[in-house]
Image 1 (cartoon, rainbow, N blue to C red):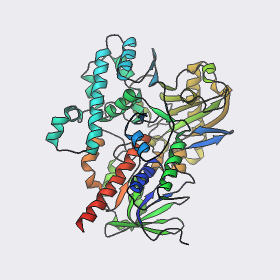
Image 2 (cartoon, rainbow, N blue to C red; image 1 turned 135 degrees about the vertical axis):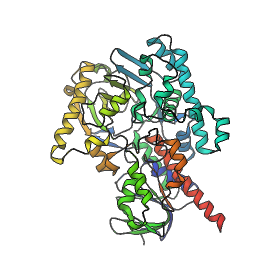
Image 3 (cartoon, rainbow, N blue to C red; image 1 turned 45 degrees about the horizontal axis):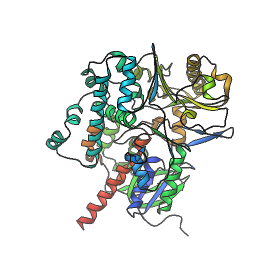
Image 4 (spheres, rainbow, N blue to C red; image 1 turned 180 degrees about the vertical axis):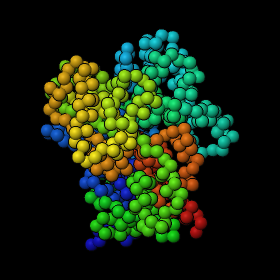
Amino acid sequence: MKFYKDHYDVIIIGGALAGLSSALMLADKGKSVLVLERHNLPGGIATSFVRGGIEIEAALHEMMSIGEKNNRLKVGKFLDDMGVDIEWLKVPEAYHASFPGVEVTLHPGFETFAKEIDAVVPGTYDKVLAVLSLCHTVFDSVNELSIHPMSKPMMLLKHEAFVKTAGYSTKEVLDTFHLPKEALDLLAPYWIYVGTGFSELPFTIFSVLMADYIGYGSYIPKKLSHEMSLKMAERAEAMGVQIEYRQHVEKILVKDGRVYGVRTARGDEIYADYVISAAYPNKVYTSMIEPLSEVPEKAIKMVNGRRLSLSAFSVIMILDKPAEELGIKDYSIFRGDSADTDKHYDDLKTLGPYKYITCICHNLGNPSVTPEGTCSFSITTLPRVDGWKTVRAEDYDRVKHEVAKQLIDDMSDYFGVNLLDHVLEIVIETPMTIAHYTGMWNGCIYGYAHTMSDHIVARLQTAEEEHFIDGLEFAGAHQISGDGMGPAVTNGRKAAKNVLDAMARKEAAK
């Protein structure tokens, strides 16, 4: 009996959230789909691991675009529609901001959020609410335009705020509201989740982030992020998708400008009309296309012209006391020596010391996540890949532990408790860890940086020009919607839609 079929409609390289989203959408339309995953489990960084008998979340801090059960946002609705049943827990707050002279916990809901900032910086309620309202308007436009593209005159008529702000940075737009610096600082913490300082971050991206997280709140799966990937994989298989693990794709086969299949590391040649790749275009266009002569020069120029965004460095600890006994009061803490996003972005290209970090106490969003009397606490910074690419193999262990110690000491000082005295289990994740286990290019979890010259609006306009090889699509953090687990689902759906549209055009041409 043959292991693979003679032919598939679509082969998907990578069984993380984007690839699984593509598989679900394609299977829902009756297409034959094969998913090839190099790891022994689905999910990519949406996974967990076990230490000391305790399952530990590997990556997810919070999930966007879920929404309440009776008012789902796009990711939550897609998963529901596909029959992927996940028990979501709403995160109790937006974040606790800790900057010099400022300690405040802010909660979701536009009016609530604005009132809480006004309590710290009196007289700012109306302006903060106006900022959030503008973000929400732009957010609604982005969601509509992603489904129903329209001409520029019609866009200006129906989506005036989106059009008028699309060409400006977050700093430029926020400056027009003339808010005090203290209030602007409290609007800044989420910048790290998109990985660009405010002077370069397009306001469109900031708007989507703030409207989603502040307007609707964020969520986590009760059984950790691996519940998402496992249930998506299980549902995809129930819909007829073939998923094969420990299958590393080495080559994407191309002839006369069109894909016709893939070759695995063990030598299997598998044929399909379309291929969706989770591997970064950097890797695909430089080493995976066979023959390489089929790679257009424009594809190489494209990947060379894009800047990689952020990776991750995390220290994840299981501590021997409940959070409250260690002085940990908030699920999410953003801590920095300032709220200067541009300065921190520059710092992230180094090996530290890192002055902007985010901390998560998982138990304060999911009380049963660790055994009674313990808690899970993670400290994360999101460095750029630049610095970590310079680390020599012989220095790696020393550098890793020096950075981890700096982060632990910082939060120990903050809580007034030596966290190392309470460690039951500790895991350190670096960009190298991510690159090794997931294959992400240079350990980059955030795809290509969103900048004023290269972001979602510009990418939507050039998307068709970047179809360099017929039948080849990409799905992952490196695609149009950018970074994060929510956008990964959206990017997977977009890749599947592109394939379905291409199939429809081909059928109509017969």
